[in-house]
Picture 1 (tube, rainbow, N blue to C red):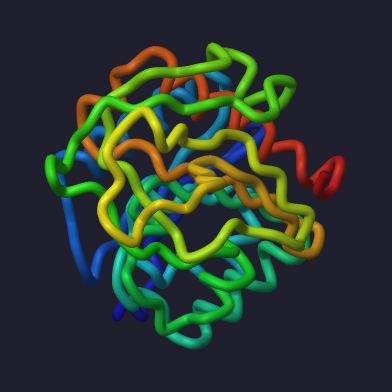
Picture 2: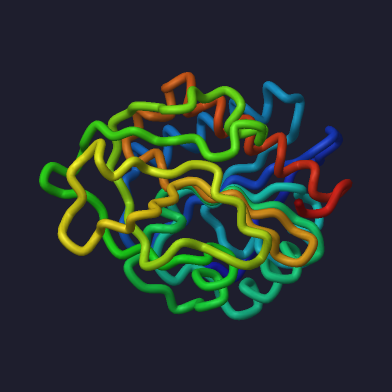
Amino acid sequence: MDTLPPELPTFGREHAVLVFSKTNGFRDDAQIQAANAAVRTLAEARGWDVFVTENAAVFNPVALARFDVVVLNSTSGDIFLPTQRDAFRHWLEQGGSLLALHGAGGDPRYDWRWYVDTVLGAQFIGHTYSPQFQQGVVEVAEPAHPAMRPLPARWQREEEWYAFDRVPSGHGTRILARLDEGSYAPEPGQRMGDHPVVWTRCIGQGRVFYSALGHKAETYAEPLHLRMIDGALGWAAEARRDGCD
């Protein structure tokens, strides 16, 4: 566990983004590095400040107050001290915004129930493994959402397809995209019927965007995937001004 926070640079741009990818569980370093670089590039292209770290001690009230958006990039395992959990929860409820990418919602169990039950709204139960990566079709449910606008109505791509124990509900949940279960071969016990893979939630005044997509490092060079993440960043940064919707 981290106790000494990193030194933050001076921020002077419209928005600041914290990209955090600590793992105390499963780790795919190639994916993490590719996604970190992609998010940095997207945020900097918007003229925003970006800070990338794996030091969880940055989750303290003073440091978090400097960020509008936190990106959890395939974090895994128990990574926060109780004080860091409290700081993160307060920051989000008071109008921060979270983008959680792929493995940030992919642990088979969570010690922090608030994170899985309230922030994510669903528990990961497994993914495809026979084979692990399969072609499948993502169906866009809310084409007007900024993250979905760049995407075709039916988006075919290869992925390690996640399954969850339930469809998220409550907390203003909006299912942005679903997986067509007829387009690939779900594992036994992983067929959901209604199978969300991208959704948003409201946590107090804060915004949450979760995408189960993006296991392979190469996916962070896919133009449509990058445009989805970029749209999510833009949507997330509006929470301080507009609250959650």
